[in-house]
Amino acid sequence: MLELIQTLGKKGLDFFERLGRACILFTRILGGLHTLIPRVGLVIYQIYSVGVLSLLIIVVSGLFVGMVLGLQGYNTLVDFGAEESLGVLVALSLVRELGPVVAALLFAGRAGSALTAEIGLMKATEQLSAMEMMAIDPVQRVLAPRFLAGFIAMPLLAAIFSAVGVMGGYFVGVGLVGVDEGAFWSQMQDSVDLYDDIYNGVIKSVVFGVVVTWIAIFEGSDSIPTSEGVSRATTRTVVHSSLAILGLDFVLTALMFGEI
Amino acid sequence: MNTRIVEIWVGIFIAAGAAALFMLAMKVSNLASYTDDEGYTITAKFEDASGLKVRSPVAMAGVRLGRVTDIKFDNISLEAIVTMRIESQYKTLPKDTSASIYTAGLLGEKYVGLEPGGDEASLKQGSRIKLTQSSMVLEKLIGQFVAQFLNNDNSDKDK
Image 1 (tube, each protein chain N blue to C red):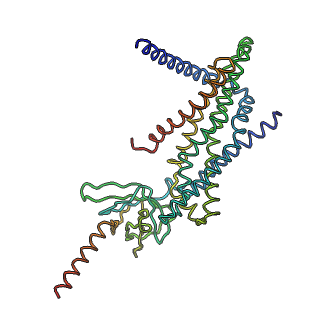
Image 2 (tube, one colour):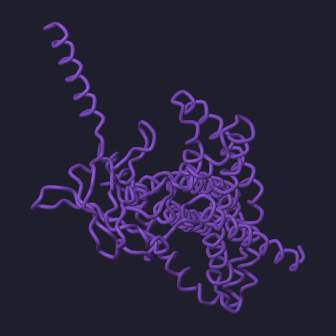
Image 3 (cartoon, helix red, strand yellow):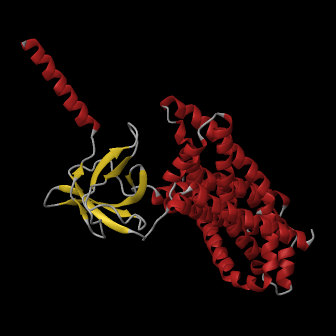
């Protein structure tokens, strides 16, 4: 019995210790951001590896998510004779929810895991220690550019996802099943509000970008420097960031759209 | 990888992201028809403004002239005061214009429809529309219809 309580206490302490380390790392990264001003090249290369290389998966999934929304939405709406509202349905669900959330989940799987694995292996092969030996702060040289790149890339990816999804819904709705084109766009423009919907979607994707990159960088630099440790850290990155995205999405939605 | 190619790709990526945001703002949202502080506001008192919302359209002859900006309750007359912002290009609305609340379609959104009058003077900032007609509440309408129907039935029997 006592052992059980002890295990629980140890788990709790471990959790808060990790949380504390993560927060310290976060503030150190924020503090190191200013050193990036003369080293924009580092950030650009990281934007390439987390953003540009994620473009393919984002565009393809956005297109298919939009097309499925168009098809399913049409099948439901046509029963009520409201198929003209298809544009509203596709645009609102993409801009408010699916764009930021699905793009962030894909980002966590595609870019977050790669970040963790890269940083974990750098730690395992003692590259980070070597940098410290040369009086280079690895937080400034390695972690900060990656964090900034994730922060910049994520909202752009989410916007591309939503835009491509709307196009996908348009192809299926107007091209395939024959919703009127004018009604599709005009009803959409009537119901989607720039501030309520699009700005809030962008805010969501910024928050997700910060959280996913933070988790990925922390797990990488906190991993046990063995092959098993790195693989575990990569798994944890994907699991924790997905959970964080979905949980935060509810909180943000309640704050933005809810009456709570 | 060549630095130049990396930079070009990042440039394309950022441009594509910005273009996507721009498309969302212009094509998907209502920004294109957004009129913020331009125009003038007029008010109208309605006995019943149920279903009307802030940002509902205000239209005359089927053309949208502005939007509802505020709906308040008047403590004295116990009516709803609806404030509407009309775009500044429509400045020749006659002073005795009347306002009614209509429904777009059978179950669609409510909007304020304006009917022109014949007065020479036109509505200005802060003017009040005096002639108003409240929104049709479907339940009330059905109630009236049923009551009339029953009355007719009874009077037929009396004959």
